[in-house]
Image (cartoon, rainbow, N blue to C red; front, top):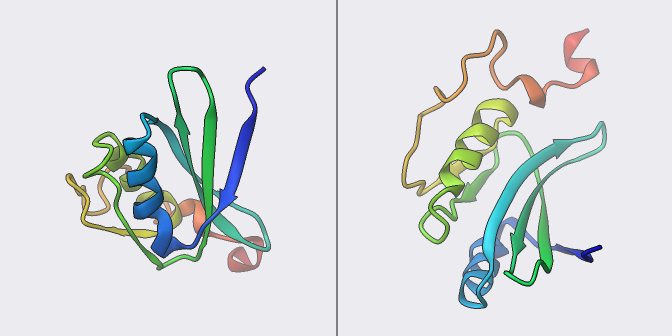
Length: 119
């Protein structure tokens, strides 16, 4: 079993950490956003060929702007567009920006809605 480490970072530190992982030979394997009733955060997971994984975790809010890492890891633009469309987090500097049209949903930013928003 591979150990996994979650390192808390600020939104401003994401790009610097991503550069470090790229320079250390890691590849990006996923970015995801999770929302609980108390918080919302983005997790970036990086992997080396020896299967060691490390993740960075940043707290975000709907409407926050995060600097894209797609210039470092090109496939990141897909994750970033998805998080923008479903959670309402903005990304600046994406190599491809779908401008909120990657997904068509009945409710805009559907995963950013809390139970109290529905009442």
